[in-house]
Amino acid sequence: MPDAAEPTLDPRRRRLRYRAWHRGTKEADLIIGAFVDRHIAAFDEAELDELEAVLELSDVDLADWISGRRPVPVELRTPMLTRILDGAGR
Picture 1 (tube, rainbow, N blue to C red):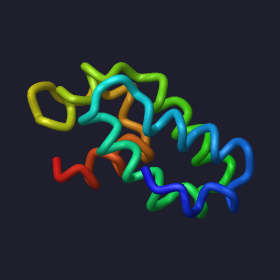
Picture 2 (picture 1 turned 90 degrees about the vertical axis):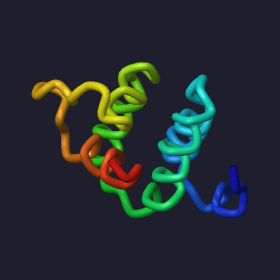
Picture 3 (picture 1 turned 90 degrees about the horizontal axis):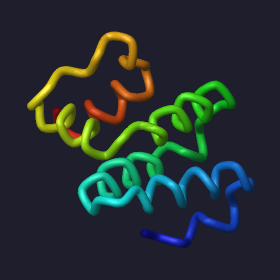
Picture 4 (picture 1 turned 30 degrees about the horizontal axis):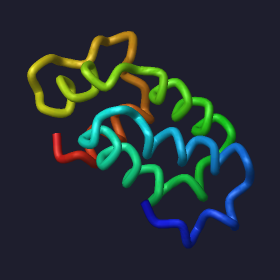
């Protein structure tokens, strides 16, 4: 997890970045953490809210959706989750 951008982020973004890199499984850390590192500075408040919702999802579900083992339930297909999954090469 790179720390160079850390001081320039506001507290909410730093907290979300930390949560993205400390999910519980290394695979989720790498996929979600890398996505957040690339985009967090540009997210508006609504996108930060969406990111927080994604971070509440389980690693097991995210791994299944990323790998294509299971489709993402319609009610969870948010623009943010779609961006993360597309960025993971799904």
